[in-house]
Length: 525
Image: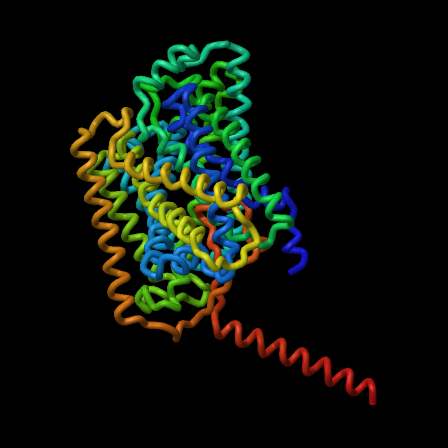
């Protein structure tokens, strides 16, 4: 335990650093050209840092060290809103799968020269279902079988292609001196003043989501009052630099009118190889395969992890007992199946009805941010409520700046979250095939249905709670058990331990102790 508590600044930074590698979001950044740098700075300063700091304080309040977001909100606003917070935290994953698998399909379509795979809605949805359900069925055997896959796929399929893209981008720029986006500052300022809208910042918010998962481990950090803010500021700077370079690398060679969101990175790599190292043009196919492999590894770790976060509601009996059973491999099979049905329905709507185009990709990003922001809104509201509690509980970390700092930082985060949440109901300028009215109606209906269903689930569970009698018990994970190659959004904060397995383990430990005592007694005689 002592070694865990002494995790240094670098150790904690590496715990969160996976969120820096987000090459699949570069095409969305590329749409804004040079202005993407400004949007990343804005998202990092007025949203990411407030989330990180307020989550850290909530996580270290006495009584909040177990249960994650559910406990943070429940202990302040009540179990209803605690359930809403954790349920929406899980729901956003079901939509996020869509953009992730679109990315795989885009890469495969490019390297196979099979355009129909990415443009034919029925074929694209069929490929989507094969990939998603194939990974889901494979995961039913437990997460242990995927740990090595995730480590390898993260290095080869996410880090390596990102580095290649950035290196090629530098070579291209210094070799040609030409870029496909407007570099004139006056033109960019004019574009910002005349065309800026809140919905533009949605993909930049998405790039920074998930930090609350790392805040849960602040108790393991040495000197948290100094090291945690320092780690978060460092993370923001690195994220802004890497994401800016990545987005600008894509924007430099792929004009906006020819940019495909789920193929943008591979498009850029192909053009850059042709312009800088034509002899290595075949390398684009290697990069495409590696990127598809990287995303498959990422998806495999996301299928089970976020579902486990719902298990903290078991002691409140909110979710039906039927949903909270696990198999011998500690996999919540029934919840995984329910998750799969939700993903199948939403992906069908976006892929078949909305043709799986750039518009569908943009909608999927907006839906993800919309759902996730419900959780963040509740985090900020909970934080502001606890700031005003007279008899404050002890906590290992406080937002810097005293009471003024607490109000200022959480207030900025809350206002930003509310503004961006509102913007997800309005189509951005890059959505061409759906009218503003139709888009807004679709998004409002989606949100009302999801929100209403969440409240119904809570009401039925709350009125007739079914508590206890599970074949497992849950415990909070320690930071040294966290697989660092998994993105924060896909991590799970709790480990499920089968009760029968735990009892057998306890019996073996008792036998070992008795055997050792008997041996010592015999020796003394």
